[in-house]
Amino acid sequence: MSLPAALAFFLALALLVAAGLAGPTLWVSLRRARVMREPFPEPWRAVLRRHMPLYAELRADTRERLEPRIQVLLAEVPFIGCGGLVVSDEMRVLVAAQAALLLLERGYGFGTLRQVLLYPGHFVVDRAEPGAGGLVHETRNVLVGESWRQGQVVLAWDAVLAGAADAHDGANVVIHEFAHQLDQEDGRADGVPFLGAGTGGGAQARRRRLQRWAEVMNHEYRALQARLARGESGLIDAYAASAPAEFFAVVSELFFEKPAALAEAHPALFEEMRRCYRLDPRDW
Figure 1: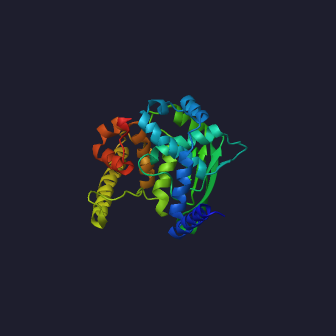
Figure 2: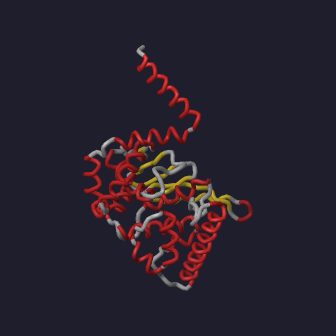
Figure 3: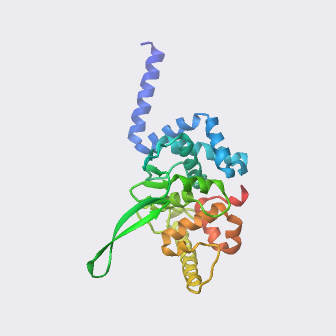
């Protein structure tokens, strides 16, 4: 081995050792950098133009930020077909593109996401729920989407298609379920995703940021419940009143698909969502 070759070999070895000592975060960053250096496949763009009108509406610079996040998700997350469904690249790309919207300014992945399960249509989930007197009730739920804290997202393909086809109806099952994934990254489904630091950084700023989030979200959640009790309708769907976690997921759908309406009807709520996702969809 020549001297330059030997130096190159030992340098590469040292970098590998350093990366290993630095832990998985560096390995992940290196792997993602390699994925993002690959050109975004033109057939994937064709899928998005065909099934996701929002993709064409995005500014060029926004698409440039979105595409590498799609690539990373598809490189890291396996998709599994259920109920006889054979998962195609079209399905994978369309799910990943909608999920990647949530990551535009938050990074490149969902911290605990392990796999995406796809059904052809509505799927049934049986649950055992405790009742009065220690009795356990078996319930059967027909769903189009679900997010599990173990790191799985379950989706109905027909609902994915419908959500992508209309980018401004405020209903998107992919956004909804992947918002749950952000919420569940700390192991709890409580409607409080990682918010980052407030202005100035530091523990005190983070506490202020969390306190402001809690004040606004709790106020809006209780106000929605009160409106529903009075029989009044509004922009936010009634399902959002079922739990704080559902409130965050439903409002995430509105934030990305009806941002102007949300900002007008609930300005403080919109501002918290804007700070959470670190972007303003009205600028797209």
